[in-house]
Image (tube, rainbow, N blue to C red):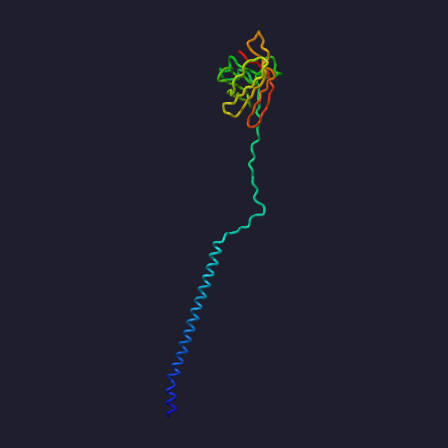
Amino acid sequence: MNDEYQKRSDRPLIVEKAIAQILAMKNVLYFLHVLLLLGLATACNSQSSIESESSTAPQVTDSPTNPPETTLAESPAAITPKVEEFTLEEVESDDIYGCGLAVWKPDSPERPNFILVATLGEPVSMWMKIDGEIVRFEGLSAYPQEQPGTQFYQTFESLEGEIQVGLEGRFAEQRADVEAIAIEDGIVRIEQAGQEIEIPVVGVQGC
């Protein structure tokens, strides 16, 4: 009888131990669960950080071994102005008549066509035939004084500013029977778009 009572009195202790073991197991499981959640969270954060770094990292593209060829626009070829002889009738201006200066090629006939014709006085106007058209110029320097045997140089520029002309020569001895003075050893220099040509000339200045 006493043994049976002793067994019954021991049952609460066994139950309490079992309950304590179960609670202990629950704590262990809860702790493991918490560790598992922390591990997953850490893994997710690491993955997000890696993805963020990969998205913000500069993109490196393979550059070609040979850089693309640069095409340079070809500049238009410079055109040498074509100077032609002309007559006074081709100049559509009354300013050309009167006192002035005219030059022509040394090998021209007795009644030559002109390379250059200019007026005397201020302002100085000058005409030439270039590329098939009569072009009007204005004088840029003072008109030379008619001193026999002296050298002179006169400059002109087209009204559009695209052509510059220089005339140099030497005044010959003046004849008593004419109202003009001859021009010897003359040279006309024409410059346009970086191109320059020279034409030997002779001529006359007077009225």
